[in-house]
Image (cartoon, rainbow, N blue to C red; front, side):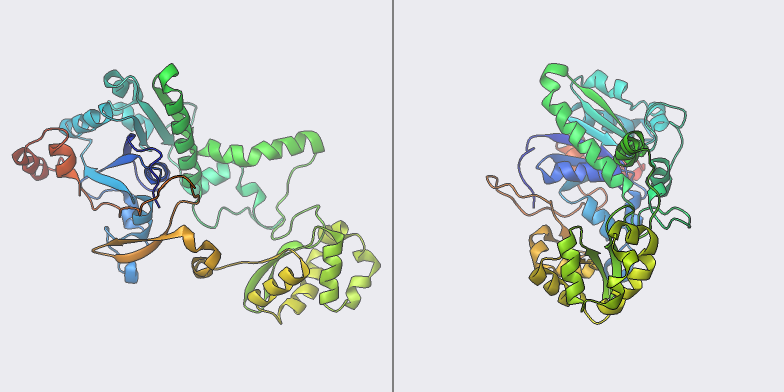
Length: 401
């Protein structure tokens, strides 16, 4: 759903893949008018990533692109040409916000950095998202999601203690950076009347370092310990606090309170192993014997499906939680309102995750589908920038749009 909170706000988005498009999506879902500028040859690189309907690759049917770019208008401009750069500058001059994830050196080389754009629009709020930020020794290096998760300290805490560190199961860094950009943009807009325009520097590595190293630094200072990789268990915590196998998948098993653990053991039939002296201290049991006890508990879990275990947990007030597949999440009636169906002629109706919030006193409307490449060239370039239809044709013919 789309809310009109930011109606009247004009945003120009230049970028690809995750961070800048996700920032633009968050603003568009809140009612901002977002104009997405893409390269005329192949557009946003996310167009070349799946999933695709029926597993048939097509640049206009990438599920990733369609999700990230709903509610936006789409235009094309070749920023390597003077005319293409002029188009962008004119759009930036008429915008409240510019968000991009183009390399800092490239923006400077093209004459499209903040100082250049602010000459034409002193109140411009611009968010520049890059792997390492606009300053520092790594400023001009590129990076992928796994590089940034590793650099930010995330990987050090993921995986088994005796194995190599792991990264996220799916790309996450760009989404965190996009959220950081969107929230800082809104703050800058709130302060624009008194502080004027702002250039916001978002380093993707810093978004990761802040998430992980903030609490880890405090733990090291105040508790004199560093978190170790512990696999699917939580270190220094009463057993169980882990994910285990069951009849049809996996389930989280937790019992932070002693009475919860006692009830779980009763349901399991008060097994003989639970009476052993070495299992009296559940924190010691977790740190020293977790793998052994996992086997005992999984032997019982193997007789039950996730849905059955959830019913047992609800009846006896024990914190068990099914580990759901993507299809199960989509079919969960408690999450039915999250998904919205967006229809486009070339894809038909497809369900996408919508905004994860509801506003009681604001009317919501259905989101618009993501634009095809250059779909709104005529509307933006002719109706707003004043190009004639003949000039538009020449822009197409020369590869500028």
